Image (cartoon, rainbow, N blue to C red; front, side, top):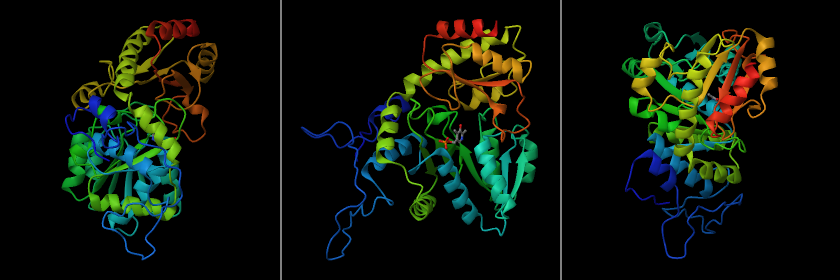
Length: 382
Ligand SMILES: *Cc1c(COP(=O)(O)O)cnc(C)c1O
């Protein structure tokens, strides 16, 4: 895999990265390699450039996508079968790295509930000690850091859109010998690159913006060092939560348009946030673009855009359900980051943190005409 290094701008990289070497008559796209195994040397010698042996260890289609993610985030990348498989691998590797008998993990109390479920289960089983913290309280989080502590960060967070001070928290973790990981699903590597701030690991649910078309589940782990990356690769090979080459091809295909999709979607999200904020039926709008958002200044300083997810609060669960039922263009479904605008009352999931208000509707803004999106919301709000 050779990517032309003529530009490091992410809007160009999403198009150019992970292509086969350019040669006359050669394919422009990396092929989907469907093979569980690869010919090996009967003499058992591993050639110096020996890359592929068995499909659980590696696949050329993975390598193309991983190269693209690696150039975008700034560290070696490994693809996984889902975002949560990537979370599990990152936690597994960080637990080993922590070198503490029962490492302390600090995680966002209002963060993605799938991650919290994993961590709570691991805490119940005594693999770790979990502290659910308020990531917006920078000083309080810094005060809890000790050597070997693992700091799990999510900013903007799902679904509360909280903004954590990533530069300060990551630097604080590094300074005291703690480890830090960032779930960068909402921001995408186009919004922020936590490895450049000193984070040890970045994870993505590539199911969301990276793939962008609501047709695959996939995850990615990107590491700060090749030693850590090797542990991630070993974890994947040993536990086997591997991605399908077909899905990985689709993710790379989706990634090609990430820059324009995101630009369009976050522009629309910003417009809709302002319109919704002045609607009488809406109690509160959470979107980092709004000056009323407590993390607005921080978001403006650390993100290149305010993102395409927003959340609104209606009077109660019933009002939220009725609103969603009235929408015609917006799709009522869980998930986010696709070309189609989607919305969901988050508390319909039993595992969602109590911190999330019952009337909160998470909205993932797609790439449709923004006037159409607003017209649908306005009629649904009644
Ligand atoms: C969806 C999501 C995940 C989990 O990803 P899956 O691909 O659904 O397994 C993790 N973190 C965040 C922030 C998410 O939105």
